[in-house]
Image 1 (tube, rainbow, N blue to C red):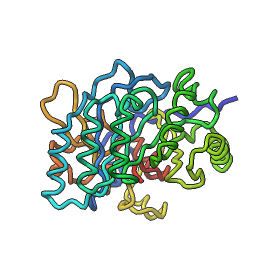
Image 2: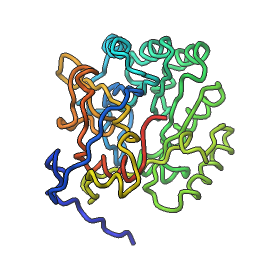
Image 3: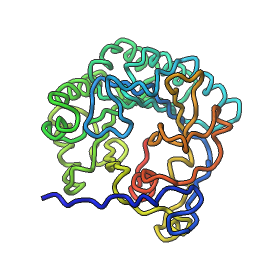
Image 4: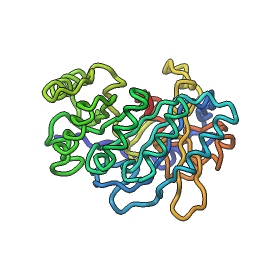
Length: 314
């Protein structure tokens, strides 16, 4: 029998400066912009049961960003001397955006690494030839991270829809056979021991000839579940010492994400991949404007980043 989770106290995560108890809230400064995320749009070819960004075939709250718009941010990063290393593309399903191959070519052509988060289904295969061309030119500088929520088909399909496991595995196997650098993202929220989960994925990869080390926390990322309505502690300035963690290790110390909101003339820069819709985490229109500190004033900041120790990039 499942144990009911305590619901979030509505007094929490209201004031960017102070917690509900009146303690000073933790703030993370941008140490160096090493990872730039691009949300290609919230449209997706499937509807998942629990999608933190609410992607679906009908949700275009974040519209398709264009290659020339991304190029402008890459140019700005170079102009301001940002030590950019990697550009990640997320959605929705990134391959629904027809400009994705051009954006990848621009990123990789500048000597940067590129990471694409995908369900590896039909939208990706529609760009198979473009992907092969990029792999031939840039090799392992391009990584495809495929979402497989669980190593068992029934549990994956429970989240993403009947038959999605089989179709995603077809895409993953194709990527592996073609020599792409592939990683996998799973969910830790199914319960059970992490070692057992990794063993299950290892067996799945071995059975399909996919060369992923399931023991590697980057090659196989197991993300905590994100439910902003479930109770979680607020992170105060004192928590860094109590938890033995550093603000410099948080995702927003080294990353920002670009989004294009439906109806807007230009993209905006937000604090991270987890909070594309919350206006409190929109930092400006340019990378320079978005270099200001981020108050950890959201349940995702606490559960995913500080307490969960997770990060979206490599």
